[in-house]
Length: 316
Image 1 (cartoon, rainbow, N blue to C red):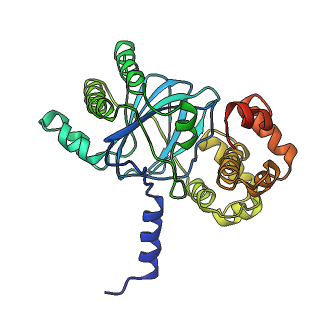
Image 2 (cartoon, rainbow, N blue to C red):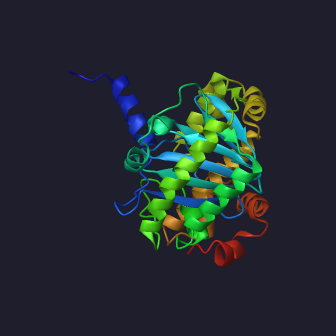
């Protein structure tokens, strides 16, 4: 049967958005602590075959899922199921949150009773993100479990820098004691699910305007940075309307969001090609000048790029 060009395009888009976490057979999942003060994460929309869990420690993070914007705060437990396309569009300057991923095989072998069957689903039963606010006691218990499981893992800087490692990355997760990690991940998943079942799900969200959904898609997919006028034309809106509506609905100015994308691209260019100088990577990432890059970088990390790259971020 012939496949239409539209169907081919859709299939290509679905495949492209699925991220391979490249977990070896040794591991049933992974766990790390994401920290805004370390590295900017790739913020493209994606999904993966693993069940994902986030627990917010401090600050706030904002996701776009199913055309809605969700902002989460400390002690929030978040579930992202395998078929849920999700995009981290913003993190506060002090944001810190745990990220755990559980392979389907771990979910299957750990969830045998009727109580835990909800973990086997591929998507939520309603629109949005399944989440709950943990009571202080449950939060501390879960946090202590996560901290103990990360002992023996890779350096926090490396894990946070490589988080969301895409198809071009050769990074692989490692842990000194895989057996302990695997046993702990199963226990962690069930403890968190028990907390989810005993608490209410919050439903506060903002439904995104089609123009903003198109803007996020265009920005996520563009190979070469477009001007604001070009982006607005692609979205079917004026420059002023797009800028105003984006800030209103995403919660951050459009230029700040684009600077986050540029920073992310800068790190990718600088890491992937050791022959690139900082200046080469700056322009390849879409910054208009080194001065603009320096200002954005310093605002994000509290120091200049050369000092940060040499001392803190340890990027070659």
